[in-house]
Image 1 (cartoon, rainbow, N blue to C red):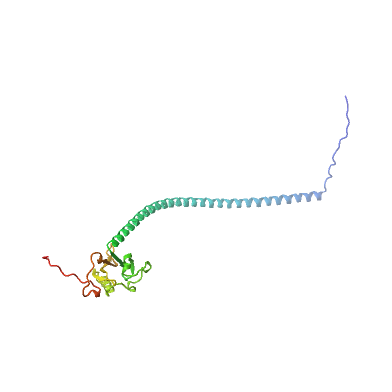
Image 2: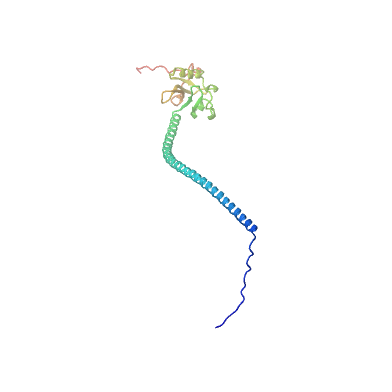
Length: 241
């Protein structure tokens, strides 16, 4: 049997505090605990308020999402309608292009027909303003494309005929066609014909003035009265001949 002896270090025990010091420590701890409780309660209340605000915000977001969904559905419907309308417009545009092409072709055909027939044509409005004219009309009056819209009375026809404006007004007043043979200042003969311009709905939208070149058929002999600008009528032929 062996006995071993060693030193044991012992901590110094704190001295018991005085009663006043113990009371102060308890009060300090109590105050700290009360402050902590109040702070915690305030934080809990703030969190509850924030939670309510988040709920309200979430509800607003949900409402906004529903509205966006509804708007998106409306946009999709509008997109489909626009696509359908666009297809209709493409079809209509194709039809219009075909009509424009046909009208251009008809216009070219008419211009070539008038040119080949030696017919100078002038279109006037109800106010006697120039609406359109064929190039051959330049042999009777000096017109430029910029003259469209100007009154025909502003121009002087190269005719030995002084009653053109009177005849134009008379046709528009009576709506009865008028024609006569007239001579230009350079001794060419034309058949002047003035007719009302009727639309497809039978509306009078001006006048059509045509000058048909009679020199293409024959050139009249100089006879008394030719200076008046009106071509004398040929004598009636004997039916027995």
